Length: 238
Image (cartoon, rainbow, N blue to C red; front, side):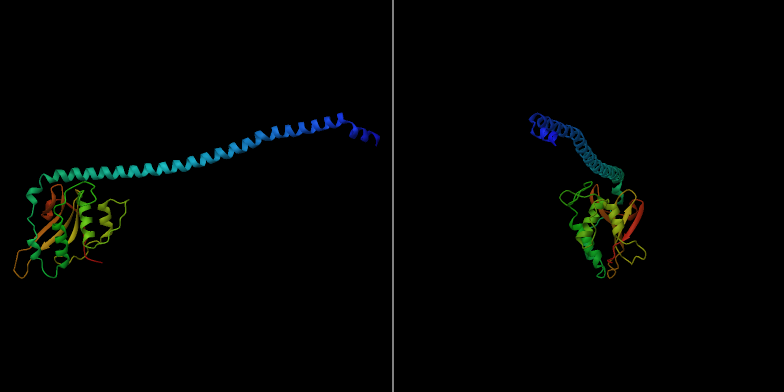
């Protein structure tokens, strides 16, 4: 009992005890600091890796999109080259069509009248590969899509699809065409043209058959056999 009292009453022992306790605390702190820093560094590294993976995934997506656009651009250029080569010989296939021809369309061919009117009303529009407006110009599929929307056809605006494929997917296949029914004709060279027949049956006029649409020479009417047909789609309203 006396020994304990001596320790309590001895300042030197108390100071030494406090120093030992403080030293223990400091040692513990110095031991914990690297562990805490290691944990912080681990979580920071994990966060940076996760962020880098997200960024890498986004970059890969952008690369894939750019590659797809490059692929589409190459296809467009190939089609344009083919169309330009054919354009040299389009003159021998040309058919004269003007607003007067609309008068000879039979009364029961209202859709044909509306369609031809819209096309001829935009014959001032110029050829422009990949163009998206009358002011900028259109290529052949772009002009076809523009005219169809203008006369009331609903076409989805899918940026992932080329206009040609969009038209193929949006319009019904041609199974049982009606007499004098207009249709959309897809040529292997890339042209997308409106097929139209005109005949004034009351006047006994000879039937006038042609395709009309955008070419490198502008809006042009041609004989249907000017190039090889790949597919056709009905323009009958669903």
